View (cartoon, one colour):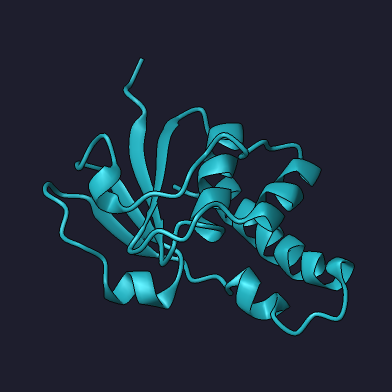
Length: 138
């Protein structure tokens, strides 16, 4: 049996997109050993937890962390999920494959939402895009 590939999902605050990607990787991809982190630490977004639970994936036990807090520093792939993380991705030792897969920021999209349901709609849209990405991730 081959070892699982170590993948880091990186976004600005490790509050939403990278947490969703880590959650879907755990749920859909037994061939991966997923991690997530942020260039900064903003805390786990409760609306991300809500929409992931709707999709049958529990990320409530995950937490926001920076790359310095990760238990390992060598990855097979590093996936940046926003432009800021892509531009500010720290150096990692080894020969990790760098991939940029930019997704809209749900909190920014939902900033002017007139209701909780409207706000959740933005989170669901990004959640579904990340799920599609993770299902075809190579």
